[in-house]
Image 1: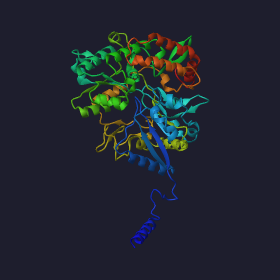
Image 2: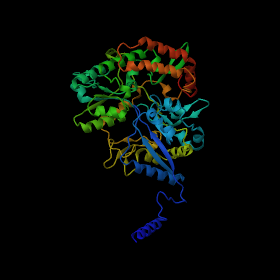
Image 3: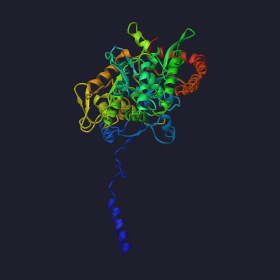
Image 4: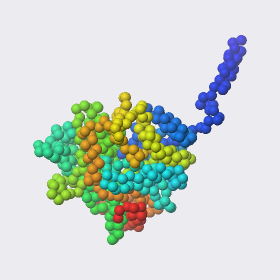
Length: 539
């Protein structure tokens, strides 16, 4: 009898659930959402941090996009603190990925990972058909009237012009060097030119002496947090009269014609490499500087393991790191240095006749969002970005989150977080904007202190930067069918132990590698220059 009752009850329950609906029984009249998987990559200079109310923003964006266009999307974001190469290799073959967001050049970025492996989807047709706003809002003009077309950074002439992805549009004047001011002053150093009681840090010779003094006084393993690339763009190459370093390109003459080459093949780079080598040996920088992820570098500085921070030296990032450090150590004080001269003699010379210095200007398209070649959703992705750029409020929702809940405008060009949210407790990562676009909106966080505002003003001073327009263009056409890529790899293999502080470096091998890249790749390097000028680059 008990068995019969059990069976009857089970049948009753099953029949009572018929028509209940739920995830397994969607309304057949309702179109299912198209899933869009976004990989938010990590690198030495770029990573995303998941916000505390991330999913609410995804839902708000999806709902607004559907209401405006009738297209239903479902965003799935994969956050990663690994490099693109480490985390994407298997996923490209085993899982769906639609969009990859990372930096456009250097260190397994968009150019030397997505492009070299032919992982990108050519968006030319889709942008031509559905991307009028994308074309319109990827142009930017600086305070001096110089015009930039960010989309040029995402184009290649390999087998005809292709568009690799969506470029960021950001102010390229943005760097600084974050220093623990309390440590600095305690050791007799200053960034105040009017303070005659302390040694002014306005050159890299004095900077290195201060770093070593910090190391000794604080018993640190090394004093500076930052990879070689960070050091070079934070002024090291500019101080040595170069317009580019290993990870960037510049123009030089060879046999009477102009070519574009990595800055590391220019004769002056030897002095840069010598200084980097001596710093690694002495403990100014880590011997493993290029292997530390951004989040780990931040932990080192915040925890007092280093006193100088340049790992992603973007000034707004430096401010965030300083605030996080002060939250953990309320007694900490900070300053942000501008571009430095090479040494004390050059700093003295600058007082009367001028001397070399300068941060490496980034491209306005420092970051890019690339649609993976295997994606079946390129058209909808282009339509989404075009929709985002069609109305500033759409962009602000995708960039900052829900206005009135997470943040609100402050004045004409400012914003502030609401309630418990702040710079160091953000509600949302900003990932659905894919890349920042200041041509649409460039709001400034209203709660910066006067000191922090002065750091931003200094970082945006155009005179602190090198002139090098090659950073605004994607110039390489094919890595696999010429000697350029292999020669560049040889140069990297020789430089790597030099950067890691190897004693008695192979300087002869380095000089030979410099010469070999030029002689074996002259045609290719000349082609890059011709492409650069054809796109409007300065000759």
